[in-house]
Length: 148
Image (tube, rainbow, N blue to C red):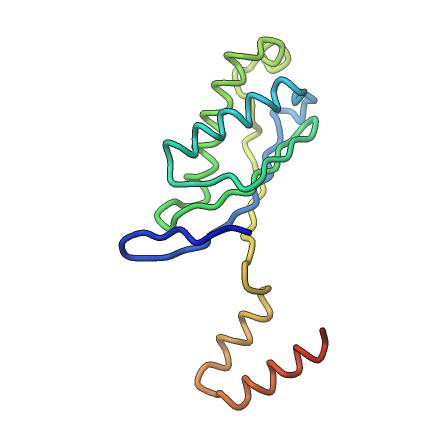
């Protein structure tokens, strides 16, 4: 489980799940590429305000579970990850450069989703909707506990 990131004016637990396909959905992620991506991500952690909680590779795409601070948008996060990892993969894995002759490792698109720590969208929505109505919220909470 991710720990809160504490800064001078906020405490946050922002976790994103990114899925990034290789360019043309080519099967280019082998053990060497997997190792390079994971090593580069460790270096990214040291230079940027993000933590890699999990990195999972498949043959044609990579899953990143990333925790970041509020000043970084999801687009900034993935742009940083993709640009640095692509540069290093091309430098260290020459076979990939031959398979992806256009000079791009990642596809232009990606998937991103937030990962909640304390419940799903419905639970948080009900909590927000029932603010100020303590009795109704207690009843809702008891109902949810009885469903478990």
